Image (cartoon, rainbow, N blue to C red; front, side, top):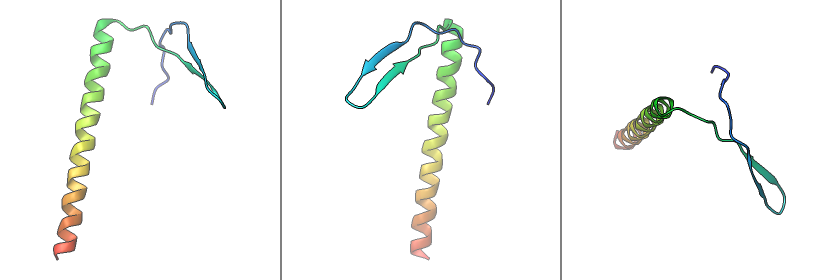
Length: 64
């Protein structure tokens, strides 16, 4: 994985009982946001397909 060259907004800081969370959000162009969303969609589809294949393989092994 390549190192990100993103520019970030000021971090949002959340304080909880045992931790402090800093959320850094990148400043993206619309084109970059769309490209990243497509990559997320593809990864989600790949995950669902892999899960379904594993279920089918498992059910076949029980039936054999």
